Image 1 (tube, rainbow, N blue to C red):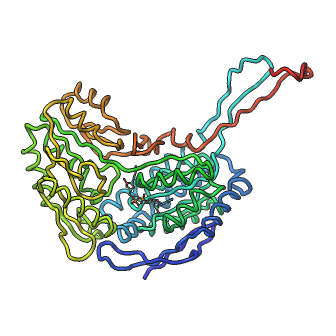
Image 2 (image 1 turned 90 degrees about the horizontal axis):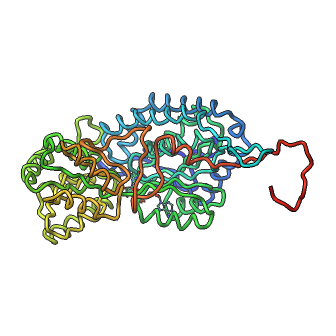
Image 3 (image 1 turned 45 degrees about the vertical axis):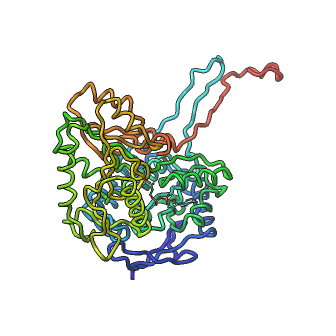
Length: 487
Ligand code: NAD
């Protein structure tokens, strides 16, 4: 059995307690993880505080910080396959996806490495003749970065990259479900040569480790990715330390197909949008909203694709759909699919367990037209597509926006003017037109409404990890005249 360690203040240790990690493909224990409790969290935050104010990191130039990030990027690229295998083993996400995604994670570190010495302050054209006034951009402080179990290396890179570029120090909390890749990544941070305490990587359970971290008085900013319910608890905790928060939460993203779309191409994008990562993606296009005149044709294509998907071991490069990460998630999916069928939704494909062992669930399509189906509202975080149809463009917009979430949307049409109208009317942080699930370090990512606030990726994300200091310098040699008048 493999054993993993946590990383605090530049050293590896076993944590206050240990817990077992399950291989979702078999449902059996495969590794032992370090569990961080309140004392470990306190040690990690204090190490990050020391590194921020007193260590070599505090006096390093931005260019030197960038060089460390470039080194980290190279190490991630070199070890991508090792990290990918660990993620696949610990979360069930298929190796085809983890290997490609982690190789691309290196590009996020490169992007922010390049930005480190381009974060500039500014000079103000102040309204007083004898003053120079400027804004310094300083790191916001110690950052608590909390990630869910899916794509942990990616979701931590979009926090670590900009925060380190800005000069912050961090405590990263890996999810208790599948922490192996992030704990292994800590070894690369060490090897890259980051000073002790700049990056600390721990894992543990929400109510103990997560809560202790988010209310710790040493934390200045919380960068959280996870579900909306957990986010509410995190924001409540932040009332204790008054940390700022950025929240990347769930979604129930609409995938809108007009009759004039290239249906074969749209079907490929829809399959990627809902069955890739076994549907465990915050941007999963889980609500298909299709023009009624092409609904049957489009559903027939989707059904044949869903039924042809190769389900198998996540470590096999040929596998297209692997297991869900946890049995808990599968049970939630099963209960909502059953309730949806009882409400009148028609099962077009899937709806069952394709294997006896592991946490597998078949790619599933539910026709929910004219039915009040719970699958349309609930984020299932699994391979379940709910289908609705429309007659008019206005109806498509109304259905797309009929959600408390607002993370992403897909629009498939050949009509350019209509695409632009849809872009304006859809309420979500990302709109993809004739494509789906494209991401880049250069493009901001984040949601509206219950999908959260704050943006990850892009230049602005690095600025979000800074705070300004306003500096006033009086340039006159004359003595200060009347001390009772502010000038
Ligand atoms: P989750 O909310 O259960 O857990 C996320 C993290 O929060 C975990 O590390 C967990 O230990 C921690 N946590 C739990 N309780 C806590 C508490 N009281 N205080 C502090 N931390 C606590 O999410 P999950 O089930 O692991 O992941 C699925 C969710 O993540 C889905 O809603 C999905 O849409 C969302 N997600 C969003 C994005 C995005 O970028 N918008 C990306 C991936 C996943």
